[in-house]
Length: 284
Ligand SMILES: [Zn+2]
Image (cartoon, rainbow, N blue to C red):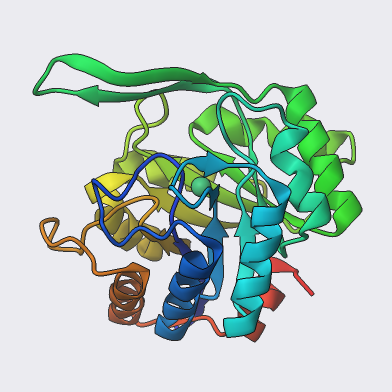
C-alpha cells in the first residue's frame, strides 16, 4: 500500500476525569492551549476540546471556549474541534460555542444510549446515565454548525448511530463530505474489538472519512486496527492516559501523539500535514 496522509487527532482533556486520576490533565484555557501546542508540535493537526472551569469542573460557558480559542491561536494553527456532547445541559447550551466561538470542526453525537462505567472487581456500576441525543437535538446542533460554517464530526458509539445519518442525508440537512468517529469501548455502546471496528467501517456512507476513538487501554490496539482498515486515529488524555505499554501514564498529550505518529509510520504511512488535513476534512 502506498504511503498516505493519516490525520492524527488529539483529545486534550475531556470532561469525565480529573487530576486525581491524571495529574497532567489541563483545566484552564492557557493549560489547554499549551497542551494543544505540544500535540501540534508532535504531529496532531486536530485537537478535540471540552471546556472546564479553573477548578476542573466541566463547563459550557461561552467565554471559556472563546478564551481557549484565543490562547490556542496565540500558540499554533492546529484545527479546533469543540465538543457538544454532555449529560444534564440542553442542546442549545451545548452549542453556543459552535456559533459564537466558531471552531473549524465540532463533534455531533449521533444517538442516545446508556452511558456507564462498570467495575468487574466491585461487580457494580460506578456511574450510569442516559446519554440523550434525540433527532431533534441532533438537528438543532447540525443546523447551528452549518449556520456558523463549522464541519460536523459524527460521533457514533454504536453501529445504529451510523444509520442515524441516513434520514439527515435524505432530508438534505447533512451534506458530503461525511466525517465519522467510531467510538468504542464505552459501557452501553459497542464493544472495543477489531471485528466490531471492521463492521462499523464497512457500513459508512460511500466516500466518508473516519477515525477510531478507543476508550481506555484498548485504544492502541484499535488505532492499529484502524490503520489496517484505512481509518484515521485519535489519541489524547480524554480517552486514555497510558502509553502503548498499557502501564506507563503519559507525561502529557504530546507524548501520546508522538507514539501515534510512530504507529502511523510503522504502517508505512505518515501523519497528515495541516494543509492535507484541511483538504481531507473539507475545512477551509
Ligand atoms: Zn470529547
